[in-house]
Image (tube, rainbow, N blue to C red; front, side, top):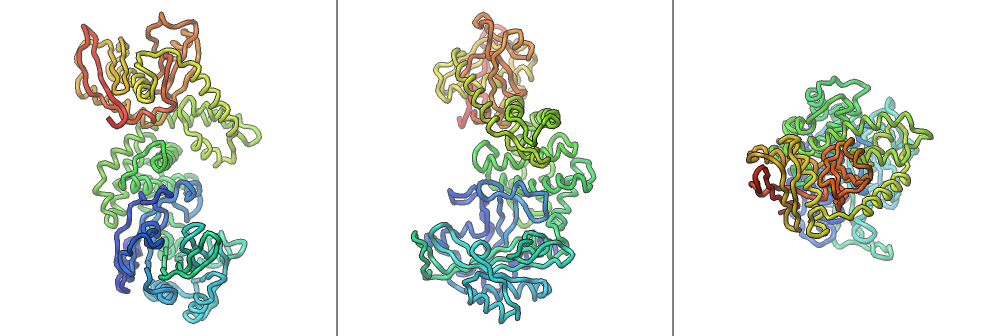
Length: 582
């Protein structure tokens, strides 16, 4: 059975048994405690807590989920085993005060053994040590004893207080040829016994003192991983060998022109997994950024790009793979096709902004790895990666962790503090700012990016001839002997926004004027400088002599928009622009 057939079989069965089939909720939850929808129960949390009405007494769906940020994080395990994903689908059925343990258990067993034709001998069941009722139901239904486990394995709660209750889990046995032990044994984390269904029986309320009291309405919350069902029903032990992932991995090979081998298979798996989480998240409205869920998506996207470069691929990757995702999952999730142009444009922007930084940073990292001693990279070396190329610390840690190398975080933090102190001490020259508030600081940093972009598009003959910055806008005068064409302005604007999207740290270094010029810094108004100057750099995007102030990272600027281009004087053009949400 394919993913589509399995999903349909589950929903059809539940509909035949009186459940209302509802569409998947967004990956962006209406819950400030969560970055993403991490489980099928998240959209119904208000129903469980009694703050929202139930959509029906019986409900079922296939819920898209992401676990890659905060306390719900499977990111580092993806690709290295067959069961972890950043994105997955959770099949679920719920009873809100309707059926309870007997009904939930009987439907689970009937669907698995009679509809999906799973051999009952391959199914193992666990119950909570306190749950005699569920244990007895399983005994009568199957003739086998359930394995009884404690709170860690078989108890669910919404938090320290609130609705909670025991659960019963169903495991599939892949057989003695696969390593691993029964649930509750020291070898339970092996691959032989895989959890395929969890029924949670919310029958209690826990108060602040830890006292349990019966709930007036007993609810059932179930969850079953579609990827695990596909592996089970297709006779493979790894989710990545199921029909969906085989197709996505084939697409990775086509886009990268690389054949998958045992040596590079981890990269294929990571890229195919990350394609789903990035694609679905952006389709649901997540914008890659440097904060919260936007940062998680940016981090996943960059991790996929890094593995693309491991395969020897340069340029667009996930943006070119996205149509394969639509082809595989668009029927079940029509938002993928509906948002296709926007999603691809968003991914392309991120890929353009990060590609050169990633390439250069990886070269420097590879150069430094042989110098590592004692299994730990020096903090100042990791900071050099961040400082010079904007290479994120967590990406450095991820790459090194794969090689058994740690990073001296204390040393990194010390180097960061030293750099910030240098930057603070250099804030002496206003550089055309009306003041030094947050908005003018953003706009001042944007003038550096604008200057560099103009030189890239119009040529190195472009020189700054003056600037004026207020909290509302920047005005930038530069040498150029003709009108700047609309397509040229659009390209300048794109380059600046790509630099912002790259989330590059702004680095300040003190050096002589000669050294600054040798480093490629743009030098203006040289008569105002002494023997030593401050050079502010934004990775490879911009390097300029200046007195500050600047934002710490280009991502703080927001968006950049050119409002007007006009003549200022003979041979001088003027641009007015805004940043942020203007």
